[in-house]
Image (tube, rainbow, N blue to C red; front, side):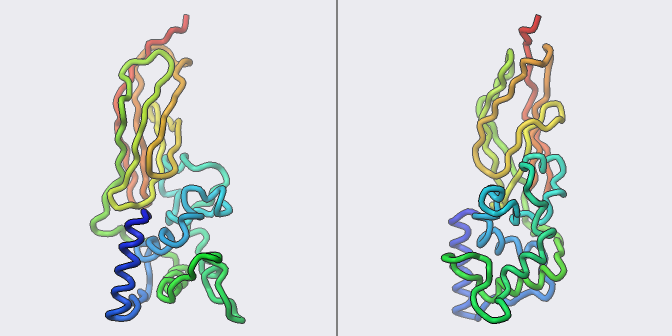
Length: 229
């Protein structure tokens, strides 16, 4: 979740709390209820850099396995998603029996609001994904100056975005075979060595997943003019 969106949500939550009390905890929360909490409070460690900062636990997706080919963007050692670690999430955000601070989020960061903790606990007891938000949109990718003809090196720049500020993972594929992974939104410099390919046309595609939708984007054909003898 981007900082501006997080601040907007926090401001909204504080306004609601001031006027009407804390938001009501759903009886059976779904991923649409839980995702904003985990992404806002946990994704800085358990997001795209989870392998370095979050012990390999990536919690900004419900189930990364559902992303299919896009999940090949993830390095080995990253665990499957929040649904597979629901019990750990519940235990880590719960107040210890003797009182005190929950294990997560760690100090010196702020503790969760009570309604956030209750939402996570109820969801973790039965981790349902549920339907996507009604106005959910697929992730997008744009490219900058991808050449149409190459001899050996295919280099271009991509920008991966999501209209809803959802996290995105994806791969750049040649003729349907994943080659380069993208484990977040943002800009990527793509460099592919095609020197082992014979002359001919290859199709470049991007396979993207925001956790709700999988989408394949055709980035166009590239003609390889091989110099191999």
